[in-house]
Amino acid sequence: LVQVIPRWPVVLYDRNRGTIIAVDSLGEFRSNSIPFAVRKQLARVVGSASGQLVTIHTSARLNLTPGLSPEPEPWRAKLSSMDSGVGVDLVVVPGERTFVEVFEGVPSLHPLPFSATGSATMTDSSVYVGLPQASEIREFDLSGNLRKVMRLSPACQRVTPDDKDAYVDAQVALARVPSAEAHLRRSFNTVMVEKCTPAFTQLIAGPRGYLWAKQYSFTDRSSTRWTVFNAEGAALGFVELPARFRLLQIGREFIVGVFADSMDIQHLRRHRVTVQD
Image (cartoon, rainbow, N blue to C red; front, side):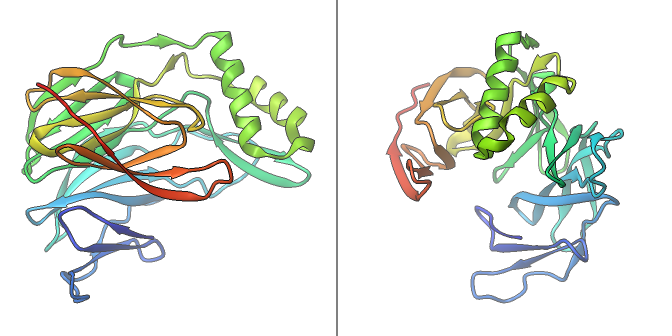
């Protein structure tokens, strides 16, 4: 898995060895391999700055036995030194529950409906960790000290029968296997459902201390709504982005993302955005 991280060179994650290697802009190794492996977990780099690296660790379900997963490994956001690999856990919470259904002998892994793990992003001076089920975002400094907590309201938006029906319809549409529709509907309608919808699913940091939080949606086929926070943690308002548009970067007066057209061909797009304090 290769990722390009803002304000840092290319970062490579070796899942077999559970190590992360940084490479500078000239292709030279920035550091030695640093072990980030946690048993039964996968790591993903979400940001780096000032010699610090933020990773999130999620459970890797290797057993595809049909049915609900056992209690998952914890989800954690970790802040580590790029040079030594020594770090601290910023947040450790229960991981995401999953279930496996089998159609024509082929197992498929799905998250529980309306479940969501945390998210994280980083700037040159702050780390933001979002806990969607708790409807809160925590800001840390680069030493791992908690600065403030931003809370979204309402704390719990109850899942309604209409919500569940819409969720199942979206999952069936994504599968694109007409012969499996009845089977998928039975599977999703019999599995347990989270009581509340998550408040958000993704965080992206912008310039001047701005933070964007993507409101929860179980499909990318509709428009998405982002809450914008200023450097003091106050919610300024909302930005509505087009359907099938995946936000990648936030600038001072622009955003950049990938748009997938009706044939799922991807296009890089830049949009002008004006945010007033």
